[in-house]
Amino acid sequence: MNMQLNSMTTGNMIQPQAQGSGIETASASAAALAKASVEARYIMAMRQPRDLNAVRLRILDSCRRSGFAETARYSKPIAGSKIVGPSIRFAEEVARCMGNIQVETAIVHEDARQRILRVTVTDLEANLTYPTDILVEKQVERSRVREGQSVIGQRMNSYGKPVFIVEATEDELLVKAAALTSKAVRTAVLRLLPGDILDDAMAQVEQTLKKQDEQDPAAARKKLCDAFYSVGVQPADLVEFLGHPLEQSTPAEMGELRLIFSALREGEITWSRVMEPRREKSKPATPPPATPPPAKQSEAQPATPPTAALTAPSFESPVVDVQIELDEQQSRKSSRADAMKQKLMNS
Image (cartoon, rainbow, N blue to C red; front, side):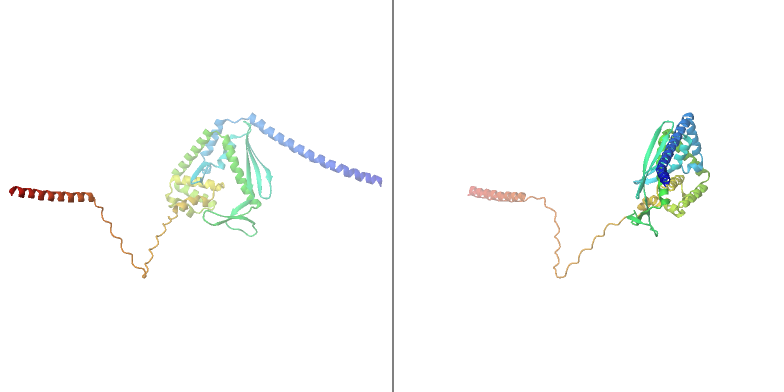
């Protein structure tokens, strides 16, 4: 009996030690694996450094492909103007052409309302790191509430219609986090690319698209319609945006539509936000308030006499009239005095 108790006691005492030893071994193994992975990346970067001239040629070669050039830039309206820049697809191609770039994403905090991700882009050759923390709120905005959705709040959009803020599902949260992560990676990767190479690449993109439109404009318009239809934009919406039929679109308008499509596909903007400035301009001007009619005069009240017409002011001074009268009186007195003197002399 004592032997059984001793064996049971011994087993109970040894088991926690074995579990603790297993956890420590797993932690040490994971740390050693991470260290070896990082060291291997840096060693390969040192053995195979990039050549910026070769990087430039590879990027320009990609920009000569019409399929890639159509998605290499994006455009979105901000504060009455629009911003045009390299897209997420372009940044991914830059990372591939440059090489020796490490991109990592980790969750640093999560609760019932939000998730915080840390996106880190590292240039292994220059040992230069750009970390970015992303706040992903576990909520989305919807114009309608489906059955089973939990409404958190509500707001009014620019059209005066209600927008409901609901809890995000796991799939919606993954899509939202992926879009924000891609934007952070784009910003960091473009910081690593020299500015002159970026300018050359954007110029090559414009040249490629211009050449494509000149060769077959009808095919280019058809391709644009198919692309917009894939993101839920109908041809009638494009006609409303342009203000004329698609057949009359100019190369500049087609280029603008391509930029908008890239922004729509990457989640930068929505079509309602694209159309908002156009619809604001097309709204009719608000007429001035009408002047109320004059109130009718009561029969019991006497009619107001018409205002006498104002006469033009006289420029003759009253002092001048008095002086003329005095001069006439003095002349008459002088005439009588002369007559009396003549009479006296005759007598």
